[in-house]
Length: 133
Image 1: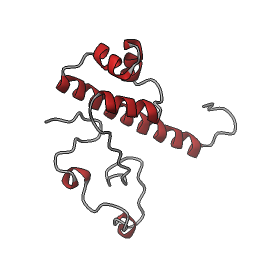
Image 2: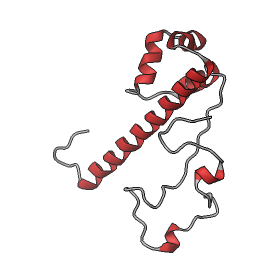
Image 3: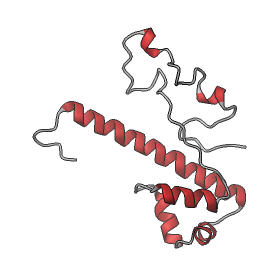
């Protein structure tokens, strides 16, 4: 993205939030993959063989420097004999990019979970943290 003419401060702020969210997602994903590999005693070469890709491709994935397709995520899930769960939640009250005007706006709607994820799902890891069992 260019920060030259025509780019508003709001657009720059939105890009910053997107970059931060992307970093968090990549960290969480690579932590989960690494945890599952260790849990199953798999090397990068083993994972690559299970996925039908080169070990270099697995290194690229674990390096986190690229967008992954849903197909690649599905291949990772199958190769790790695991299931990838996705959850889209409302940000917590302490997150920096939230702007809530009133308490009524902060109350969960019918489509939102009232309990934080960790309480709702038992021992779910904090965002970006590897799963511990």
